[in-house]
Amino acid sequence: DTGVSQNPRHKITKRGQNVTFRCDPISEHNRLYWYRQTLGQGPEFLTYFQNEAQLEKSRLLSDRFSAERPKGSFSTLEIQRTEQGDSAMYLCASSSAPVRKETQYFGPGTRLLVL
Amino acid sequence: GQNIDQPTEMTATEGAIVQINCTYQTSGFNGLFWYQQHAGEAPTFLSYNVLDGLEEKGRFSSFLSRSKGYSYLLLKELQMKDSASYLCAVNDYKLSFGAGTTVTVRA
Image (tube, helix red, strand yellow):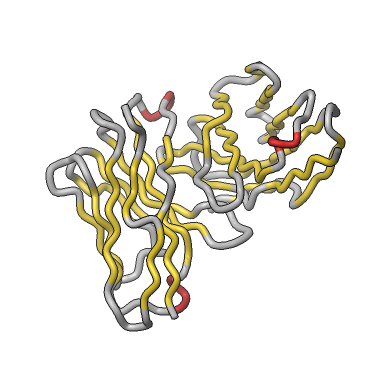
């Protein structure tokens, strides 16, 4: 078990470009979450999947953001037409236990800088 | 809405004890997590309280009072490596985090 992995670890892009991040959860974890964290703040929930179904999206997730988990394993988060305000750490977490008992384990994050 | 408050910063001496308080008002509640986060790294799990009372795990203990909407994390025998941000998070299937408490341990 290698834990949650995320790629890339760092991404620098120019405003207006599209970026895609990948998250590989702990194997057999059926729930996968995306969070965003800016400096000096705690992570903020973006969206989550149970298996391949996307069950909730935060109002923080504008139409430029889309997430998929096509086979219920890895997930991708795409940001279209990036803006400087998108600069943040994007964290993925996974869990498997019943909601009340679940522990979410975080990946190392992808740090995005939009110039 | 979700409202989770914790102090911004705390400083303590190596070997001492520090208590980080967290108060919350949330629309749903399944339990309360504490995570540790070193600068530039992902949060790592420390503890999870579902029921009222104290949970002890080595040098770290966490307490929960659901009726008061209150939790604390107690760090004992502080070490330099404990210098980090400590995040309180309410579990309502998704996590709602406080802004984090930066703990600085001085020699």
